[in-house]
Image 1 (cartoon, rainbow, N blue to C red):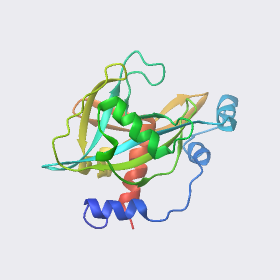
Image 2 (image 1 turned 60 degrees about the vertical axis):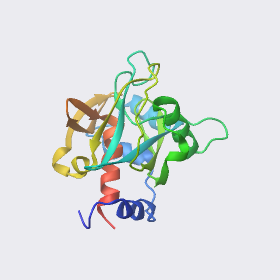
Image 3 (image 1 turned 135 degrees about the vertical axis):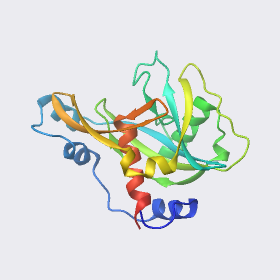
Length: 210
């Protein structure tokens, strides 16, 4: 990593121009082997627009990233570790939706979030086209109040841990009749994988280089 990992460096690198990456091409680049008919159908189908908030929180020991554990009864991605977020409503921007969903899920007022920028879209195997929004919450008295209808728990992981490539492992799993490379992080008993881990890896790469 070049340069110190502080807020202003992150802000500058997130805001810097980057060549766009097609989310379908990104998905195909992680396929090991032939492209199945089911995967081709998923690639050719329009994604359901959603956004998430990758939230940096200022703590005494340094920046952390906030995650939620989704409630077990939810229709999509039940029980998985994710960022706050959800579908983009009519007339909303990705930023609007990410801030609204975060407020609904964990009680964080949108006005308390300093939006640093956005990352490239990610297409998931379940058909969501996710726009990650990067936000910062200053040190203060914010304590998450999860809505139990959506969130089972909330936890934070130090950004320094996430930014260290040694803490991310690549593995493979079968989905849609194809073999995909996926990423995983394990911290304090939590398994972070799938689209959430892929977004973290992209974020790490963006903030690690000018």
